[in-house]
Image (tube, rainbow, N blue to C red; front, side, top):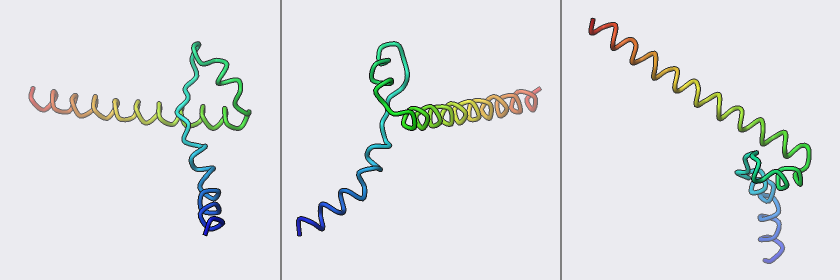
Length: 73
């Protein structure tokens, strides 16, 4: 029974490890440098994807507002 639970947990261990919400800043520079190269790369990649999504959504909102303004004129 214990082995079964342990194997289930071990299988999902990497999933828990990848969900780090560490963002690079001056205050956590040492934490950032303690990560491995691949972990830092994955974190920066996810941050850039999130930033791109935010910019796209903001651009869509601006376009919608502009369409509404031009229709009202």
